[in-house]
Length: 66
Image (cartoon, rainbow, N blue to C red; front, side, top):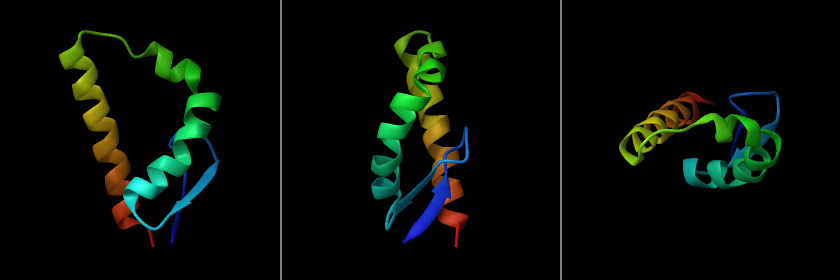
C-alpha cells in the first residue's frame, strides 16, 4: 500500500495500485480543488493533452514512492 499526498496540498490518499490511489484521491480533488479543475479550458485535444500530462506526472510520482 502506498500513501502519497495530493499534488496541490497535504491531503494523503492510499492505494495498492496507481488506479486505486487515483480513485481514492478523486473525491478529494473534485471537492477541494474544483476551482483548479474549472480553470482548465480549451478544445478537446488540448484538454486531453493536459489530462494525459497530469496523469503521467502522477503515475511517475506513484511509481517512485516507497
